[in-house]
Length: 628
Image (cartoon, rainbow, N blue to C red; front, side, top):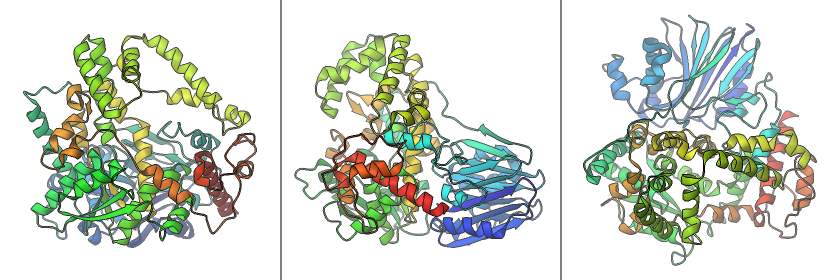
């Protein structure tokens, strides 16, 4: 994780070095190790380095190719370096080229098709003076952020953070009312892959490339999760072996670092699988043990998550740090301030992750693995409904009973009923119901004044968000849509923002493109079998994870406990306000002042809506103050 920026004065005016310095100053927290800029007449690019690989230590970005004049700035880590070095005839180079130089050489050989050859996490902007064009791209899953502003005929600017773009005088500092509404109703964070909290600033979606010239800006998609025929193997062991081959390689690639590697380790299957695999790989190459960071509760006897964490740690081979939400008194002021100074209000509840990244940063760890995306990569989708539609009632019943044991719903039928409805109710009736549901959700958005909800077209935003189409498409097509969901994008972007605030680079093996391609071809029973979600991963972790973790029921999480603990910490920098005062102070047309919140609780954390409004108030206050 590093910071990058690019400024193109479309009107031909020279780039002001003072503006470049302002942008670089904002990005310095992302890249504290080195800051460099390059400019020529109406073009300027810059880079702020967080050195997390050996090659990054010797590479100087922006990378300039003298023969063509092309200049590249990138936030990049490539996982197929070996193949690219061979294809680009760079194997004999000493020192070994950095990832940025490899991307530049790939562009010089394959032009815009270079992105088809890149595997890893990246976002970059490249100035090609031969074509008088900026070429830019973002990785397949959106692990690295990319924001841009475009005023036709005047200026184009791109950067790793919206705040960096706001440092430019040409970029207006006007909050987006639509995005504020999305935040206050909570359900609409993943409405799309482009919107931001500022008018005039847009996200480049994952798997897209961009061409910018004085005449036009065009964006096109270069990759998408593609439907494939279902993979048929002889037995479960064959599936497991094939999965492990790709999963191990995905983890191995993400262990490339010039320093210690850390990993989030919860008591769940996903992060446990990553950590257990990483520690085996590190031990095999006689490297230092994997540093793990785990959020726990004070009493293992009453907390399944805490028991599971200790069960994984008992395997050995880890260098563990545990963080208990009841034992954070010394860290609370910092965590509370981080919560109230978020880059985006959506990040307010990421306090467990902040605590983990803070602990990692204090130990000098700059790379932290996680397993955040496994839920979507290995999602069984509507496999149960498809069993019902095909008349496989016995298998559907057995799967449902297993799911009841796993999730412990109020009743067996409350779990089975949605799948029966999805399998048997005609699509047009479900579409009508979806429209009614959108109207109902818009009507019950109690934090929004009705006038404001109407102004931002809240009901239409709910309709656009919609949901997975379900059985109107094949199982593979449905899973492609799940992996193409904006919810995955915004989730990864949240982790990037929280980690970057503390100088940490997050890495997620479950988003390796090669692993994605394989998992998309898996039959439903490998993802959901006998009521066990992610069945293939559970089988693959035999001998790596303890049995009580591998076959753990449910999915408890301590995130809410951390948020309650941090939210209860009074801020030293602002006076206390009641919930009703907080509502009125934001904007009389945003929040409904008649909304009844728990103003007498004495704790922001006692009321989630109150906490949301408090964070939004802090965010809007900073925006207003910085504008002035």
